Length: 252
Image (tube, rainbow, N blue to C red; front, side):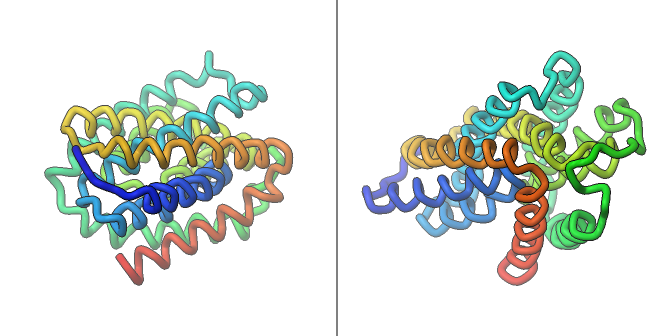
């Protein structure tokens, strides 16, 4: 899809994506910044969603690679989680054209506030591994596809939902949960992006400028998670969840 954007607009989009990439690598929710600015720039909704997936994919890729290189993820054991997420995201992206999203839009702010309260009040949401509540098979067969489908269908807060799922259900520390969540967020992004590209909705010049910002911001954010852990993930996750919930409730 073609779209004319002046240099000043591209610079602004790059800057927003850089900040969003850093936030997204730490706690998720970068789409709270990038999707509205794409709509402000004049992209039609379908193109804004598709282009947002393009730039977000680069950010989650860089963060994922950083976590893998730092030894936070064992890919040999993690591929079933990736497969479940990929399948769910593909179904969600296809379904977004067939289902009324209004009911989902009303539910998401409530879920995000729940995420914030859980992280804020729960002693489990820290840098200490806890006991798991469900086996991996339940997460792979139900949780990962469901969140992946949500990302393909709607999107905001996907990284937060993955992270809190790993903490609450599998007993991961926040640092480990954030690392694993980022890989699954990249998986859901790439599945959704492939379908949007096939439909011709991506604005490549805009997505390219924002992807560069995401690459830089995501690298910074991922390194902060590895070095600081829950001391930075916990407050950022709470703030992002609450702000995103308020944004959806007040501005839609």
